[in-house]
Length: 398
Image (tube, rainbow, N blue to C red; front, side):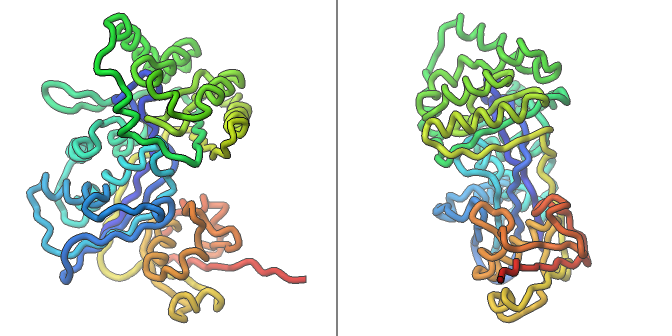
């Protein structure tokens, strides 16, 4: 039995929604699992943004999510487990890379082993591992989500997001230490500050629903965590000020940082994005801009049994990196899944198909059934059983 899952990136807190509000972002972790009768324990093949990770297998969050789901269902793992994972989500920068990995592991276990876990149970399991539910709930359900703990347990609810709102994330090339960022928080706050925090959290929720500038401005101006974390992020004040000056409703840390989130009206998106990147550059940082016009959908799985479903055609120059084979069979629900599958089996071929960020290699064109994949969403292009993917490298000459 094999299974595949895609889990979105997330931005949590959104200012005053500390540890309870999250939104799904259109960057993805894609992972598949194979269960082998022969073998023992978990093996993980990482690529894309995960390639640089050097984590012991028992500490890897994919492993912890997988085994956590098995433990919750009281289903011990009695076979070898191989997980292939690739990600477009920057690691440790406040876009929910850890939550995505935990959720992916849990959903892979549920799908491959038939654990019968509800989405609510997956959120609970992953939140226990992550330590807080905001990123996890948004990753599982998609959209914008409110999470809170009640005497009856963890509860989640979708939040409305006005269609004219756009989320912009300026992501620097350095991570933030989440543990250190949480350790920087005070153990208590004055009652007056708690009143302000409560009112701004309410303003955030209503501002997201209505795109009211005053409410969003207040909701993004946090008093619970940002004042104690902002000094850890070089350039934070300059980038936030630039975003607001260019027309954003407000700007704040994405999660614990290092990424900075701004929410802007659609008419001001280009100006706000350019201002944020310019401000980072002024601080000596070349940042990446992630634009999210609408909150992304939640995690989704696809079970597969039996033969491979997609055919990959390689040119001769690349076939030599795949044991001389011009035709490969691969699995996947998207082009990115298929490339991840092939890259895991033929590591020498991997850097000729995608770059270090997990995106299509710039000198190769992918066609899905004769249609240029660049016009279908790149690695996000959907593929189906029986599709043919043709790879054409660029030709240079004079």
